[in-house]
Image 1 (cartoon, rainbow, N blue to C red):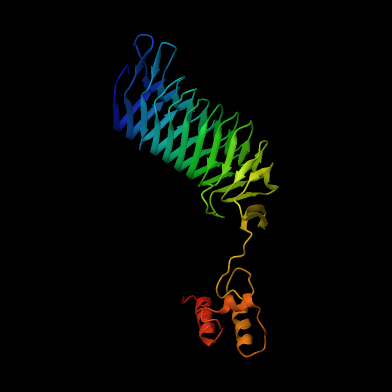
Image 2: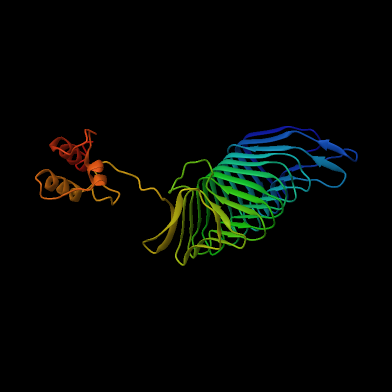
Length: 344
């Protein structure tokens, strides 16, 4: 396809030796080609090349957008290859995208935004997403998977945010490999490496785990590596989530955590785990012994207190005063009992 052309694939099959869809131009030097390639169903196959190729050179600039909401894209080399200096946007909300030899999606020095909100993106031997350009990348759903190369491999001045979805490596490589001086903020989702380091942070770029928004989650995002959750030479900021690894939860420096919080290290099965813990203890009504849960032990302590067999501190009285009448009575005891048996 040449010049300013729109293509809408809603079904059927397009199969080619090289490119199922190739975007080219015969415009004169300095001109820009526009248009959109939309795929909502059907199958595109480049048996020895690409499903979609956005071709560019020094003579023209491409601003052709790609929108994938369904269907199947297969390229032996790359399923989607975006050429140098391309300004077109890539948006994926569904479908299956797969390559055999190299990356499923390869951004070769393109600058257009990349947004992934759904779908399945995989590669047999390469990365699910390889980026050498300077785009803004947002991942908020879907699944990216690779085995023999890093699932996401990015260079240059990238600006990437992960809000959701699953990024996994089923082999010994990284789920995310960061190079050069870009920025990655992981606000949600799950990042795992089955046999290696989940996130390997090289270069001088900035890495943030969680979001500095005044609230702290200890469950999301989740970063799990077979050996190490995160390995970094430049440190990272830690605002939310949990990091896990058999050898280390992280390797490097944590530069910043939220005010009023500290790091809490635990062992979870075979994994070393680190997350954030408030320096100010949280009062749970009914949790007399302050172990973070309401159990029969708390109920027994309340019974003993009511019949004068045990004395409580001011803090313990506060925890046991379920109806906030400044005393512990059988009414409070009954409420705690109902909580334990699941009636409240």
